[in-house]
Image (cartoon, rainbow, N blue to C red; front, top):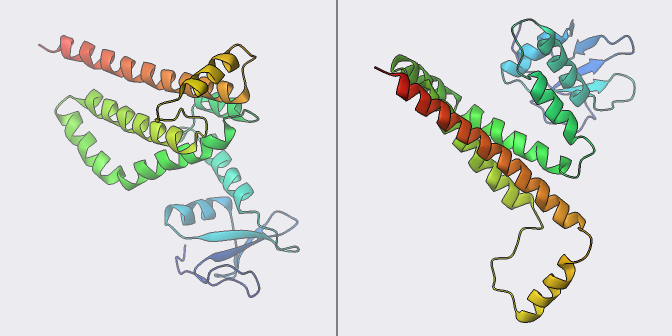
Length: 220
């Protein structure tokens, strides 16, 4: 497949280094840079090669990129042995749709994936060394700790209901005591959800530590 970057069609408003893919009513995809029809697998290869593209409706010019990328994931997940999203992960993602915490999930997932992508080469080398020294659990534990750190940063950045670090006055304390006797507010519910997520991550880290200790106890 030719990897030459193309140019956008005039009037799209996109950057010149973004390849325009036209999607027709018959669902066929046309690469305007290479003047040929392509498949979802071709687009998946372009993503892996780091090529930027935008999928547009051939008639209206509507941006269809997100939907097409979702189709690519669906096709890749359908292939035997190439699953990235386990059944449990899919269930957890579905649970967040329509949930008050939904707005925070994309930022957290993007931060975690960005961190993993930036460090994947270093992680691969360290994992190989860990496997050779029979300490892969240490690597897994470190990754869990890194994800927990990212999670806590996300919670701090995107939680507008976090308690203030400043000392409260007696008037504020009295007001808080009065409010606590009332029905739980949306802010309190959001704080409870954050605590639940943090507790789940803590449980995961504890389980990793237990597995690590168990593995060390089995060594001669």
